Length: 212
Image (cartoon, rainbow, N blue to C red; front, side, top):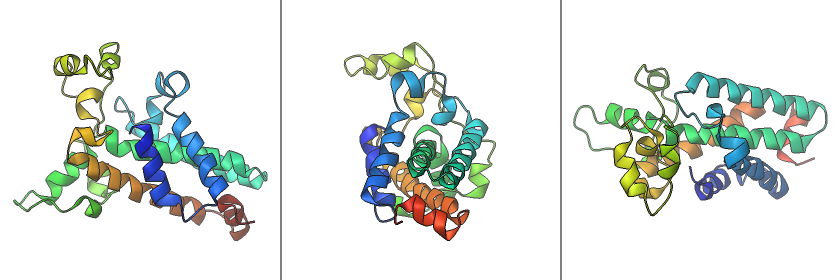
């Protein structure tokens, strides 16, 4: 997702669950994960890129473990940063994989009209574990050129259909499916929050959401 949509998704999902300063701290970590040098090259697991689905799943659990460790060490800023990184990756799952396409095919397979984006199920088990689930591959260096406004319309048609450039749902410019990716990411962000706090004691939860 482009930075502005990571912001919108995170605020929509979490603004009522964290204090303002905690929300800003986790947002900063969320957005930093898109940094070109430290968050992109060599870190497919940060974004569910290059079919690094299992690796990205493990990355989420490492961040969740860091949250617990940080809170136990009375370091909520470190916990907020880890959660910001976690939800960035979770949000990118819907923009960088074909999950939305699989879900739409599933719910319209008998000729039904697609339901509105707000009805998307973000973690349908049979789709999350489907052998057809995959994410976009980054075909460097051509993939970089696909982000340059003046020439991307010339570059993208030359890339394979399984490339990130063809598959990504990073902005509304990608058409109607973006709204499904956006809503799925909002629901997934709330799910990750609920999953995280479910593993915390009441005291650590209060520290995490910054109500101490």
